[in-house]
Length: 163
Image (cartoon, rainbow, N blue to C red; front, side):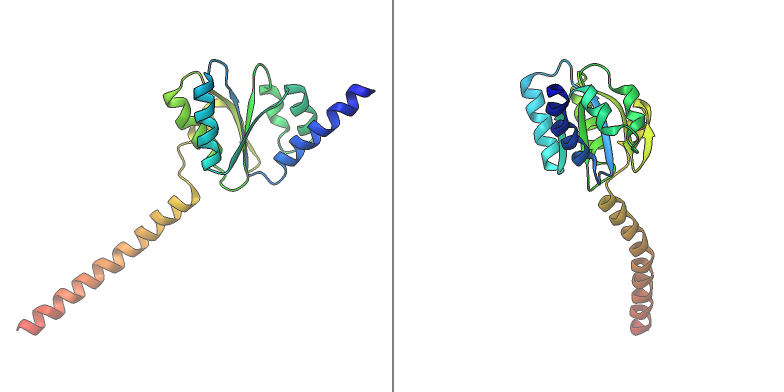
């Protein structure tokens, strides 16, 4: 009975961490040095993400019958959890960028906005820019034709003024 009581706060902490999250990514951190792990945590903090290592059984208890339950099959071996509550692609993007330089870090799987993605799917999600970057690209695309039209009209007005 005492062991169950000790587990309840940890399970509650995990549930709270997952509550309202836009994405959760599982990673295998085996083989990372302390310096690499510190750098990874620093990168994660910059993006307002959460990185934590929990016992797999605790995570399984916390995600049972939730939108995160599909992650259960990937909870084997050393597993760290990266949670993003703001940007849906940030967790995958930060971890994948770090894994490119540090192959010891391995993406396992994740859930992004309620959809489960395996290792390959998470790597694809990691290539999607942030929402802000996508919006700035869209704005740039919308402004370009207007700017071009303004330049052409200005050149026509200058030509008429010369004539």
